[in-house]
Image (cartoon, rainbow, N blue to C red; front, side, top):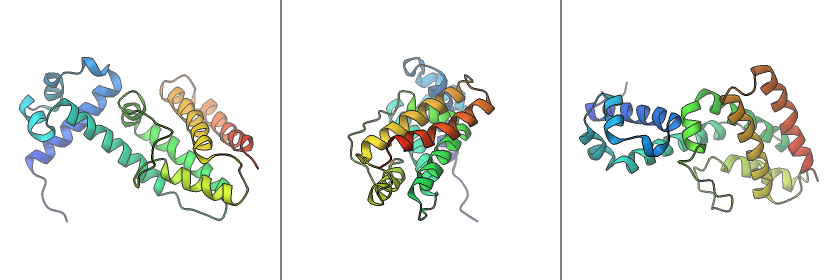
Amino acid sequence: MGRPRTNDETVKDRLIESATEMFATRPRESVTIRALAAAAGTATAAIYSLFDGKDGLIAEVRDRAVAGLYRELSAVPASDDPLADIYALAVAYRRWGREHRHLYTVLFGGVQRFDPSGKVEAADPVRPLIEAIDRALSASALSGDATSIALSLWVTLHGLVTLELAGALDAATAETTFRSTVPAVLRGWAA
């Protein structure tokens, strides 16, 4: 058993949950500190004392989303087949987006800025994908630049997941599209 949660930890979690939902469903500028505090059932002072203000709370929500997606993707085991691993990572990405729709929306809906030329950090969610792509390039299963391959796969997955979360694709269409599109992208980069 772990230690009992403090009141600050409980308030912090409620604020993060409220902020996640609000930032996923409203324009960032319309989310006020007062509204965040009210949704979490606390005072505005809690946002300042726990997060140093709205920007700190936004950073915490983003960090939680990044950490969750990283955990999901890094849990995918590597095999002797890097293309199967890339597909498994795509499945994990889609699953995480569907199971954590608000975090997904916050992460990729404006708070997070995607920089395809940026450095891949240790806990960066793209790291497991880049590693699998590097293995596929080494095995001559894919040809091209790892970052470009990752970006084309991400654009495809992001479009599919975003349309699925928005209700633009029914479950059967989304599943069929996913099963055909991910392999098609990989065939496009085949060696």
